[in-house]
Length: 295
Image (spheres, rainbow, N blue to C red):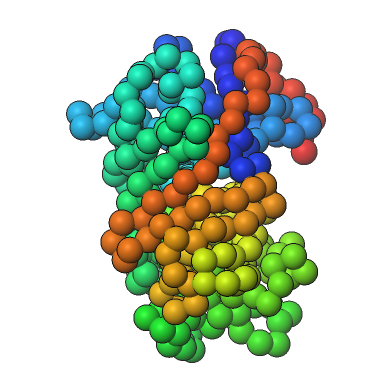
């Protein structure tokens, strides 16, 4: 079975985008993992599938699969690439676009300078919205925020995290230096912490000034990525709630800068979306190759 695909990236967060409107796509976890594989497949942090909407108020349905094959609720950098893909492929000229995701509708707008703005939807901060078991944990007040002290194996002190849900779950930690912080060791421990029933995206934020942060994110099901759109939003929101930041916030990631605005209600993200190349792939042959050569 031959599939047409487009490889895209938003601030270095890279995607394989599939047109499920004009070709039949049955995306299983095995097929998603094969496409995302960086040795035998195309390579990507996530797979994006564009389909006809189920919601009559939406222009398209937009689904996200992590590199491990699991389907997730939201991806901010992917949402920007979705808009560019739909316009470049001639699927629609509408601007703004309304996209149906697992948790509701997104409104997305492509500007003349090539940047894409996304209305990211509502935020939430209670443990139940992140499937987080908070019972028995120490907490601290930080401005309007509540920090939760996570116990990590091998660490003598708890890790103090803000909880932010933007359709998907985020735990944001303030660090002195994002570049030297051991994200490779701490990130996986937070992502798979037993208190997060559905795992979590772990963000590590360094405040540079009241409108500027550095951020690294260890993403659920993908590992550390060059950028994470929802992670950037979660970090900016957490910093504002703590009283450390003011909107708008520039978020510097290893893949580039994202710009976040939040007034306590409306959350918007702006950033780039770039097509890398188009191609075709025999998906069944690719899956068989991965079965012969597990990575």
